[in-house]
Length: 78
Image (cartoon, rainbow, N blue to C red; front, side, top):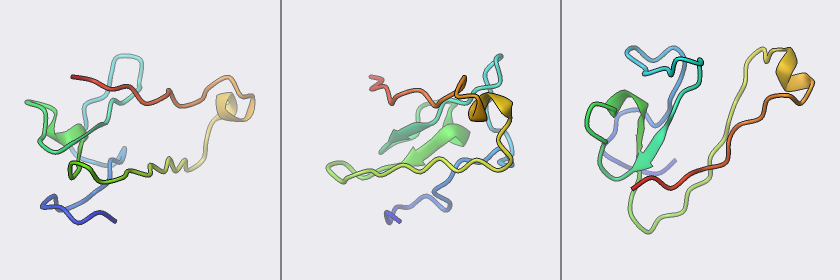
């Protein structure tokens, strides 16, 4: 785990105040400072450090097994 000032380095459906999109998806932001009003969907990063993301699914639904749903690729947002 990367060592940052952030208390927990995870985003979970059990997180209070997690911002969920209308379609049920969740945007997660990986950056050194929390985007304004998006703190609950933010993982603090340290500039110039590598990142390895893990997606853990508990009880995935039929679209996962049918290969109709896959996580989106990472997007750089400025």
